[in-house]
Amino acid sequence: MTRVLHVLDHSLPLHSGYTFRTRAILKSQQAAGIEVRGVTGLRHSAEGPDIETIEGLAFHRTAGTVSGPPGMREWREIERFARGIEAVVAQWRPDVLHAHSPALCGLAALKAARRHAIPLVYEIRAFWEDAAVGNGTGHEGSLKYRLTRALENRAVAGADAVFTICRGLRDDLIGRGVPPEKIGLAPNGVDLSLFGDPPPRDPALARELGLGDGPVIGFVGSFYDYEGLDDLIAAMPRLQAREPGARLLLVGGGPMDEALRAQAAASPAHAAIRFTGRVPHAEVERYYALIDVLAYPRKKSRLTDLVTPLKPLEAMAQGRLVAASDVGGHRELIAHGTTGTLFAPDDPAACADALADLLSDRADWDAMRRNARAHIAQNHDWARNVGRYRDVYHLLLARGPNGPSLAA
Figure 1: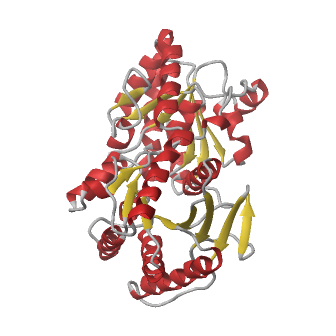
Figure 2 (figure 1 turned 180 degrees about the vertical axis):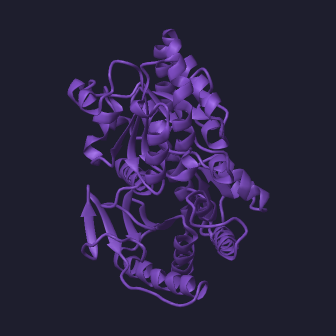
Figure 3 (figure 1 turned 135 degrees about the vertical axis):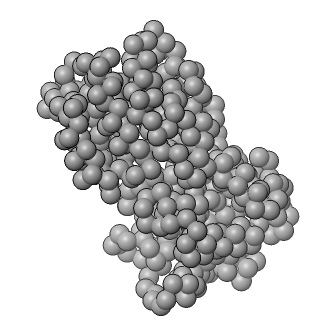
């Protein structure tokens, strides 16, 4: 049985899109007969034992802290993490190392892989320099941005095989000179076995939130600037002109929370906008059940054009209608008019009109839901996608760490 050690920035019990994708990968690999463990780096912030089992998954923790000026600090972190990985390698003897972005994980795994002659797979979920720009903690072209990009290039060059979660990231790497045959796709996915019939609408919760009888537009997730929730709030007066009963339900929180609440309070449609704050993960489905259309109005940027989000896939898996801005990451997931609705990004009027058109044409809703669910089952179910990893692992182990050709 193949043993794979996954090298991670952080993991469960923390909750994030990163940890949920990790859980899905590891669980699907377990079900496919692969032995898996995870090892996390110095940035895993949850307290716990050195080896922690969560939901049947074993995670090893790398302890310690590092300091120093930018650049030096990152290399010290990589070296410390590499020693943590090597400790697990010595104890567990994995056949393959599978590192997941950021590049600090990839480079730490590369050191351990070369020291122990273990094949290395490096998986990129996003370019973290672009993610920093998107969430307001970095600037394109800055020293930190260029350093992060250089580290990513180094990790990709050293890995025996590379995966990205979408074509946008793959095409960008090819543009940097990475051989196409080295890069495979492992698209964002969902475990369809977790998505049965959605729970019924909870009338008491709807009354508590003051949603009324009209259609509900909703967003469930983190409130980052690049998500474009300010455009969604700005769209509400125009939407209400056509759909007077429409309500907007925003579930979650994040860096833009205070600014969005202030914008909503000043809006002519303020009485129709509801914020719930963050809700426990186990309760999220109750809020999904209140929403007629999930809206994802991401702003156009390098990040949103290159990276596919997970939330629309989860919504489609639950049989929800999806409307999203027409950026590259959404176009990889949604076929306009067939599995969802796309509208021009950074344009509240276009957002309002698209939502109003969708709400007024309910005859197509059932077909759109069926098409979306079928698309998920065919292209984004982890039970199917796990085979992409398994095939590459087998190639690596058969050929040794010399870089197999990957099917795109």
